[in-house]
Picture 1 (cartoon, rainbow, N blue to C red):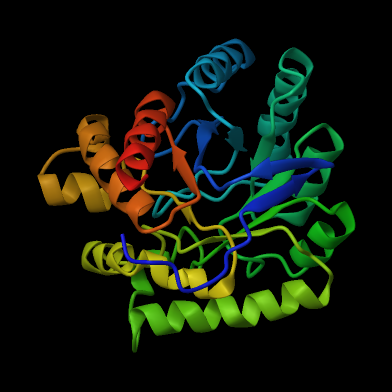
Picture 2 (picture 1 turned 135 degrees about the vertical axis):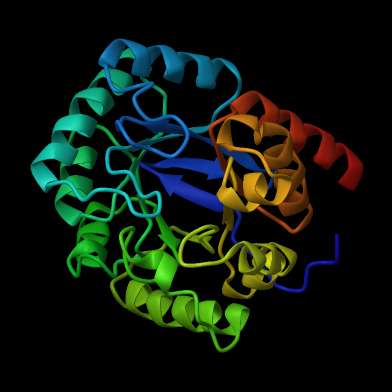
Amino acid sequence: MQSKIFSVNKTLNVGGRIVDLSVPKVMGILNVTPDSFYDGKRYSDEKSALNQVEKMLSEGADFIDVGGYSTRPGAKEISTDEELGRVLPVIKSIVEKFSDVIVSIDTFRSAVAQQAVDVGAKMINDVSGGTLDEQMFLTVASLKVPYVLMHMRGNPQTMTHQTDYDNLVKDISDYFHAKLFQIHSLGIKDVIIDPGFGFAKTVEQNFELLKRFDHFQIFGKPILAGLSRKSMIWRTLGTDPENALNGTTVLNTFALQKDASILRTHDVKEAKEAIILTQKMLQ
């Protein structure tokens, strides 16, 4: 791991609770959708969702990221009401059963973000970086919750056709510069950067982005790595998402060496172990 040049803020204020990211944290994925690329239909009922949350928390998850709109390439668009109907009951149940849990709402819609926070979510994870809903930044500012700012072009239906970059890392950096200027002007302080692996990027571009992952320290924000079972892994290995756990752990370890502060993952136990062992190596 190269020496750090930039000063990165390694804390988040989550509802008055200060979360220390100097040791990387794990964000467990809970998709309550019928068509997610890996775990579609597995947690679409409340009982199975709560069982999975309990499992992830027991394995060391620090955040639970609840999503009700599949963002896999070519995913079917659903209405705001349908998305709300999927996520709100689950978030309510999670915060009732697990009082200390930090729930993140994975959505690009400000109305969903608002109502999710109203019922107990403490963070907003927006794959579109405010691009698909012009009210999102204003909503985040009014709610005063941490915000995951991800890079994506287009939307889940069109993003695979928008991979033409002049200079991948520079173009993404320019995107973050512009977005962070808007965000800071609204007084939003707790922001996490996510370069957006798999979103409007080819397999080769994803690996280039991972090699340069620590470049994004220039923004002084924690960086999230969302590599879990992505196609960059299973296409390279000639397999499928079901058999991409080992590859995920390998790339998560590389991201940790490149200063990832949060690993977003389907597999909490393995991500937690990668953090423990990587931290041991870097002491």
